[in-house]
Picture (cartoon, protein in one colour):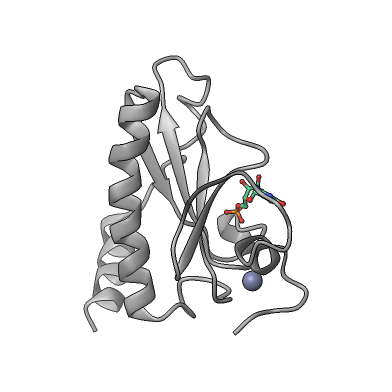
Length: 138
Ligand code: 5GP
Ligand code: ZN
């Protein structure tokens, strides 16, 4: 299924040109237009799924297998020092394009993102922590 309004559907289908680094029947992997670091790329399924909640388990599993393969290939090619695999779901979580994608972000010493690709820590009481724990094991 495709979404006629979705830019990543058009890019994945090759209707809008992109710098593609990998393509198969299921996925296209493109260079991010506004990269966090040198080599930042995005895995796009060719079918439209808005997010992790919608994507079928098998496609998600294949996307993860591809991420592993590309992490190795990109690390060898770019000689990066580390790697972030990021996947945002929902506006509140930082998603801006509502077509499932995985960010492949090569990391380099002193790449200027040391303090950015992380989060603040919340203070939780033992009771709050336990309440959340209970919700998650129901
Ligand atoms: P999100 O914030 O939804 O997780 O990530 C969306 C990503 O897509 C951003 O990193 C943004 O730079 C990238 N992006 C948005 N529009 C385009 C586009 O038209 N072409 C490419 N190559 N990347 C895009
Ligand atoms: Zn789409």
